[in-house]
Image (cartoon, rainbow, N blue to C red; front, side, top):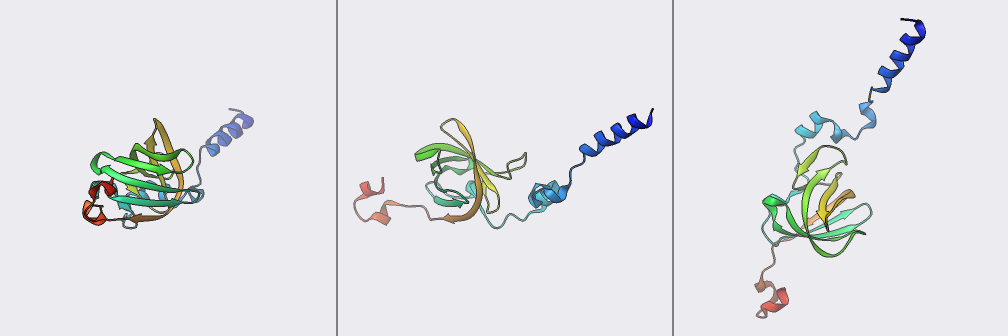
Length: 146
């Protein structure tokens, strides 16, 4: 092997090295798997009809849990879902291959499917979870709960 070929081979190997200091901390598998996940919410632990408001860097979303175990939601917000629309929450992600299924967490992006489109939001900043609404919350006229 000539010195030039050896140099080219070293350059190719160096291009494959990824500096983990440039990755978000949660993108490292060990950090991801050891995260206590206590600062967000899991919709599979919520009741049906529970409302969630999520504020991301650029948008606000309203979510109503339909079937949390299966990720079924009604969602509205951002530029792509102006009206309350059936969807499915995939979970919390950094935009890569890791996903905390059915979770919404500050510092992560929210990934869901609505209108047949996979959508990934900007970074979640705050989450507000409200108790399930019932007709009693609206007095005797239960039609106002619809």
